[in-house]
Length: 173
Length: 268
Image 1 (spheres, rainbow over the protein chains, first blue to last red):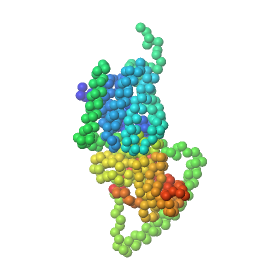
Image 2: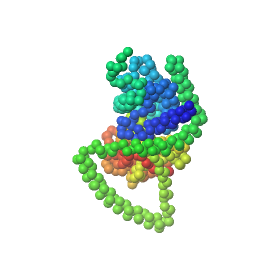
Image 3: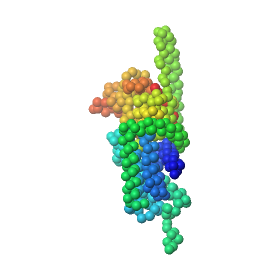
Image 4: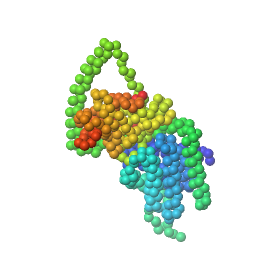
């Protein structure tokens, strides 16, 4: 039990550091992408909300370690992403298909980035909403692309996700 | 999982987040943060170095004719700089001889601290990076306001925030990263260098009657605490001088290598 928790925390730390250090060095476009909201989406789909909650808290804590601005916005961004993911999958989406994962992935990325933009807006006081929306289109597109790649990869190892097109055998009673 | 359990989970997350935020502002979690940041920064440094392999040079987008024109310009500039260098070497030798006669002490050599970039700002609304996180902090003697230079000694930005083991620096493309600057070879401050739409940089508040020319080198004037004078920033690419304005402005072509920042030096 404890070993599992420690292994999970270690994994979250590594993934978050990869997000902070590796992705931010990528060429423009990908460098703005935040992996955590997308990963929280898949953790929610493959696991449960409690497992996703671990990712919000530990991931947010590591992100805040390397943040020099107002403390707490990364926590709030990831928390908001999880709320959006939960509401969309439990109340709006009827299945866990490629299309619903794309939509929810885009919504989770956007909600996280919106909170981080708000932080940046408070700190710099002159950030432009129009510029944010312009760059956000690129970021959300990359977010959807990553979600689709992960969807296909995870579809091979889990039966919790649905393929793009429903197969005839899925309807056999 | 039932609706009630989900609500309980959300409540627990919110409570933990509030405790962590309050703990941070009360200074309770600060020692844990500092220790963890110090422990994790070498791993972040490794990931960051791996990420730099994917960075593209801006020259990749240029056509062959543009590159050959650039090469020609660089060759011309190189010849001019060789002449300047020869002239300055003679001047330096004369200066040393005169100092010897006057028994002048040598100027104190600058101390450097090398630092690796472990992360960059993701929220910048520009294709240019504006903030970097370094793997050195106050334990290594870093302080707010110290200049960040590249391998050639060209100024890239300055330290804006310091923790025990890591620090944050702003690059000159960031709006709030402003510097008092002057002209190379001349004393005093001529204006304030600041970002122009986060894409390039300009010098504002230059007196209308000051004579400027394109190609002149802009250096720091040393007006701010911790910022030495004479650090090269860039050269004037365009002068904007309206007849009825109180000030003139100069657009600057930064000379720092902003495409490949993974190791920087901080002048103490």
